[in-house]
Amino acid sequence: MRALLSSGIDVSAYHPKKRGLELPLRVGFSGRLSEEKAPLAFVDLARMLSSSQCRFLMTGAGPLESKVRRRAAGLPEDSFSFLGVVEDIRAHLASLDVLVLPSVLDGRPVVVLEALAAGVPVIASRVGGLSALVRNGETGFLVEPGDTPGIARHLQHLANDLEELERLRRSARAFAEGNLDAGVMNANYEEALRQLLSEPGREPAGPGSS
Image (cartoon, rainbow, N blue to C red):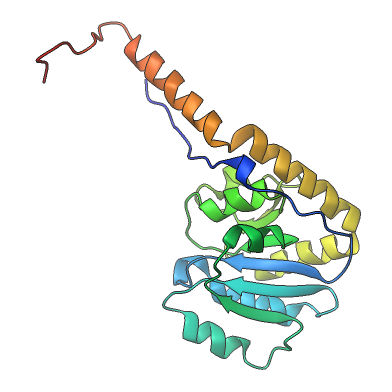
């Protein structure tokens, strides 16, 4: 028998920040500034939406940093901020209203687990392991890779329905507590090992076994 075991985090170390329902939304990108993460698409989002609806906050470093800075040149300071590498990512994530991952290639990014644990909904591309973490209308929204206008539409929807945003916040935290905690992960490891050792014909290794 083969088992797929997912990684987890210490959900208790993340505390959703109590925020009022108000605009502009604080929309974040956090990750490596490289082609597969599509950080330039995040800058394009800031050009699509007015500063009265959203403020875009970008953290990270990588080979596309100079391109990110050039593309962001001219954007109003009240609509876009490039913060580079932040010292306390947990506090930064907790300050966001929405995390955006416009990746064209990805796996199971820890930043998504951290955001959900902090009660922050996620809008992400439907690639890699993201579809197992981002559940449409529950923990955020999924779009096809490259669909930056689709991300913008979801952000506009949330900006126009702050009660929906609050519901997603609560749902994101509940999902993290039930599915992403390291304690759950360890229990899954233990159960998988127990089942593996109980398979017919499998004998425990004795002294001197190789």
